[in-house]
Length: 231
Image (cartoon, rainbow, N blue to C red; front, side):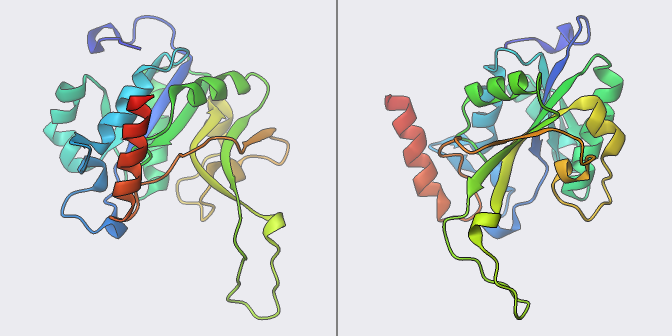
């Protein structure tokens, strides 16, 4: 996808992407947010922006950033993207994106949220998720729990087979999410705010979708990015 900013808002745009990049990444231990640190000499966020521009069935996307990045406007010019200001929490960054889409993309039917701190995602995953939303109300990216589970509560013996991890990206039918999403809810995962009748698809086969969380993750992610470039 190589649309220029001045052409946006002209044609019907039903499939919209959202890149979440407003967090500070406290666990990463850097003076700047981790999405603006570097991997192999490039800003972390640049990998996800390039990926989203290649998603063939996505009509447009927005990038949710912090107050400083939004008011500065440098990212818009540097990467030819549309940024909006995030909130104080992930829930409100989510909410701000939904409100922006409602106003600026009134034809939106499907939306996918991804995180800038996951630079290894391939565009084919998002393409597949948009297609899956023809038959499902939401799609969640999942990972099996492979270690034993502990619990701080006494006499509780959780079984790992009863649980799975949920990570980005996550995809939704836009109207359904708009009606039910509450940014102040204590429920972290947006799909769990949807009615029980909502039909979800759990995708367990997305590989190497590693999140940059700690400084120790840098070497592995850089290696995997270099390996992809050699392929």
